[in-house]
Amino acid sequence: MITITMEAELVQHIRKLIQDNQIHTVRITLTDNTNITRSRYVPAKSFLQSLSGQGINYPSALFSMDASAQLVPEAGAGYHGGYPSWVLKPDLKTFMVLPWLPGTARVIADVTTPGGQPVPVAPRQILKNVLARAAATGFQLKGAFEFEFYVFKQGNEALTPAWQGLNCYSDTKQAQVEEILTAVIQGLEGIGAGPEVANTEYGPGQFEITNSPFTGLEIADMAVYYRSAIKEILHLKGYSATFMGKPMAGASGSGGHFHHSLLDMRGTNVFYGPDRHQELSDICRWAIGGQLAHAGAICALANSTINSYKRLRPYRFAPVNASWGNEHRCAMIRVPYNRTANTRLENRLPAADTNPYLAAAAILAAALDGITNKIEPPASCDGSDPYAREDYPKLPACLPEALDALLADQTMLGYLGEEFVNHYLALRRAEWQRFQNHVTDWELKEYFELF
Image (cartoon, rainbow, N blue to C red):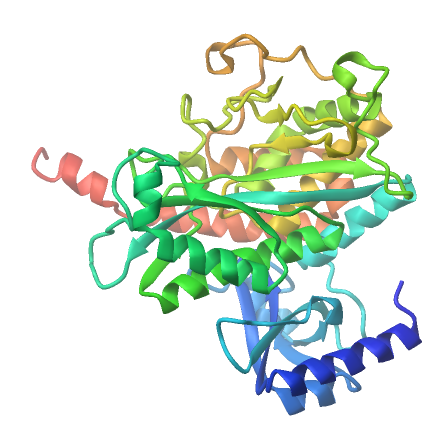
């Protein structure tokens, strides 16, 4: 908890950063339930003045909009509620200077009512709530999202990948796109994301750059900064980056795999069990069991777009059922070979377009339920092809199936809050209905000449 003295010192530190870096504009950002990161641009002087005041106003109507900016009255109090203003309260611990935009800084904000109460449907607040539940049982979350993404050249109507072919890690191919790799690595280092390795991936124009793990809320905050940084940096260089789960038919999808472990309050990794089978503790095993038991509900939050489900196909290194395995990249949960302090799980369910606050909250909530109720996982898929197995529960095949699974999961409703779930369901279902009303290119090509 930040004390008044610490808060004053943090404000003084930010004042110095603004002065030393000649910051003229601060972008105050948040991520909503449509997974859009929105911002208000505030002059640096006004930003500093707001820190001792009420905060920055924010229209609550934006939280009731889907991806097309269509207002969904069922998501919230609707028109009879009047769509009042909320308030952005910057979390000063997230303040950072953007090295690729001279004179600009950004900070992530929490959303509150004018009276200072947290908005219960805000994704960052949902993760805070679940992290508090974890802390009450003696655990803290450590982890990082591992994103894949595609890069295309700007200026063409057709999508032209930044590189062609499928030979990921090819030194020749990577040398041809070194400008991209170097610019992104330097930008991520400049904001403290801790990039570890970078390479081309298994799709034309596809990349992956991993970053260091963080703890608690900072995991999702840094994931938001990571994606925004890459899109902004590459836009300035004449490219367009996308974190869509499946931007091109016939090419690999992009995952947002969540590597995570639980620590006790002393910082010791409680997934490591040196005296247990495969050196995985009972807590780790139960965490696997909980995530598999709640896989459908997790899917609704980790794959929030219609497009996300086109990635979840057999033999595409994406999961299709609730399975787990040691170093098995076809399962929903992979257990990397690392042990001791690096013992962790990789949940491969999220797409790259996942909302990191909601995905982390859902996965953590499921793990906590598994630990609380000592849920044993099924046998691992080690040595077998999980895509061919019929004994594992299948994952939702489309967004409506996942939403139904979330609504039916009373345990997850208890962790996430019924008000949030209703708000989230309204937005996703409105988006699905718009999709159902849309006539696609595929339909025209398939049927136009025939009928």
